Every structure is written in structure tokens, then in C-alpha cells.
Amino acid sequence: ADFTRMANHMKENSSRFSSSPRRLLVWMIVVVFLCLFGSLLYTISESSSLPEAVEGEIDERLCRAAEFDPFSDVIQLTEDNFEQLVLVDQESVWLVEFYAPTCPHCQAMKPEWEKTATLLKKEDASFWKVGRVDGICERPLLSDFGITGFPTIFMFEKGEETKYQLPQRKALAFISWIKETSALFANQQRFEV
Image 1 (cartoon, helix red, strand yellow):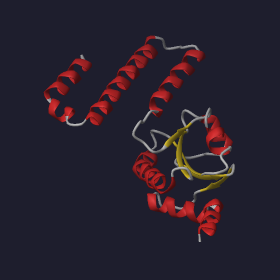
Image 2 (spheres, rainbow, N blue to C red; image 1 turned 90 degrees about the horizontal axis):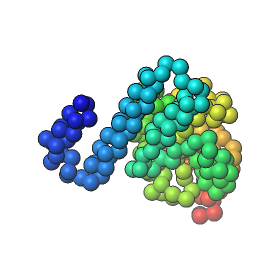
Image 3 (cartoon, one colour; image 1 turned 90 degrees about the vertical axis):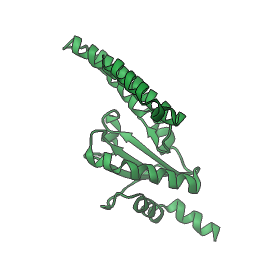
């Protein structure tokens, strides 16, 4: 019934939905995600005591669905790709946010984080990298870096981390801090002069 109501609403407001292929794609992704999420909730409510393996599978599927954002310049980091992308990288400087999707501070900061990624990517996409780690889905990474609250921000260069401790949560503050803190950036500037 809800799906039918949503389809009728989309049909009635078709001019709003057909104005942009990108907007239509986003709406389709949202609808598919809601359908999948609804079926998972129904499955969970069917059985109050799921085996741990099934619970883990559901959690993993929900986390993978939540990670997908085709329009973002922020790289979604997981336990599977964190070491290879961030820690092994000797040529780039990473700015990484550890966040929780339900955290109000993280939600408020998200547009600034996206802006940070976009600005740094435009400046030098091979040197500056901006990522984020979902602390709910990637709990082992939280203990690896001593994360006790959200959002927590680190800069990584050559496998070493430096914690962001300033109160400002704006794109220009992040960019200014990473440029002042990065030894690789300082060396790069010295050779360009």
C-alpha cells in the first residue's frame, strides 16, 4: 500500500521528478533502498531470535547499502579497504572522519565534509584524499584508533595519524588545518618555490 501511494505521488508530481535524470536516479535508489530495508525489517520482525550469522549478514547488507553514494567526492572506507587505501599510501594525505549515521553532530557536519572533499579534489585529487568511516558498521577500526565519540577526524600521511582537535567544523577550517599540519604538503611547497 505504501509503495502504491508513493508511485501515485510520483506520477502526480511527474514534472518534478522528470526534470533531471540525476534526481530521478537518486529517487530510484532511495525507493530501492527503502524496499530492501522494509523487507529486512519484515524478516527481522518475523523471528525475534535470529541466529548470530543471520544478524551479521543483515547488518552487513544494511551497511553496504548505506555506503553507496555515487555523487560524493568522499571515499567510503571500510575495514576491508582502510589499510590498503589509507595506511599503505605514501604519496597522499588523507583526511578521515569517523562518524555515526545517527549522530546529530555528524549529520550537521556532512555538507561541510562533502565541501572539503570537493575543494581538495579540485586542488589536487592525487595528493589530497577525503574519506569517512561508518563507526557503527566498522567497529574494529574504532578500537584500532581509540575512537570514543563522533565525529572524530584524523589526518593520515605515510601511515601516521594526527587527530583534529579544533572546534571548527567547516570546510575551510579542515583545509587550513590539514595544510598546516601535513609534512608532505610542506615538502611539496618547498620544492615548488
